[in-house]
Length: 377
Ligand SMILES: *Cc1c(COP(=O)(O)O)cnc(C)c1O
Image 1: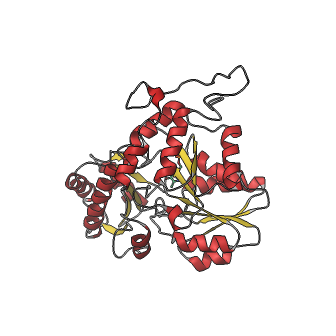
Image 2: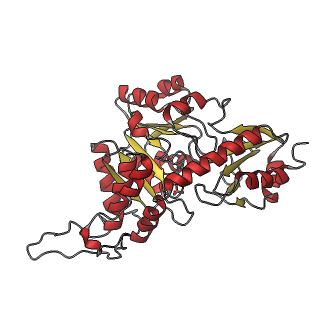
């Protein structure tokens, strides 16, 4: 079946317990009844360790990512945390130099003091990844395309390097979504998503998930961290994410088409120094993206001609775009990234990230045109 049909199948309620409703109910129960013989007839015990709404979300996303199981978390950050927490003090991690800023902060401020060693390297440069591998490297994390610089890493090659070193490859697939890219099929061991973005898709819930290609000691540890650590999404959060997921394919196809159109127009624009979008033929990662993705997604960044003030002035003038962080919702968003990240960020100060939504691309372009007027002169 095609991904469009799989999504609809995977988000339908699965059991006859739903009174025939075609939409799943929300199981707000924190606890589940135990039989007289001490067993749990429905397998659920307590909603920290498992809940029908969470189970349905995990099963759906595991299917769409071609994995065996998934563990849902209360945020994308909690999902990534669980992967690092599954490692030991003294282990070494390689992550991209321009990985999502929250992940950089997590490694520096939380895991380094716990004794997890890490190096941030340019993962688009496989020789640099190879050089960074140490005897104690247990995990290579990649994010492709990356947020907000849209750098593309070769998943299959990174998986090969990781496996040769006896390490696992985790791929943050948030920017692409499973409609456009399935990293497990290219050799990744784990896929991470901020479901906050495209999967839930409506800017109304924070969530995350880790999907595994196969059951492994690493994933067992992640499952343990989920249940014992308890950074779990609520039943309503899971219901919202599953509800949003139903329209994933049509949203992502439209957003990607809109983004491609905007990227092409903006790369001709006199006030724009550069457009970062893997769907453009001159993007350094275009050829690899064309191999491992079936489309290029709804996220792009522009480097405005000028400095931080020029970029902030452009963002100040938009009318149809909303100035806000995050991406993947129906409403187009614009964000000056460097000023929300901390000092020392690698994000260029003249970069504006665009989350292209479901408006008409001509209206979006007209808005950017008027906002860019007079910039970079
Ligand atoms: C947003 C995001 C995260 C973090 O997700 P939260 O739900 O905000 O914690 C992680 N990785 C990427 C690529 C993201 O865009």
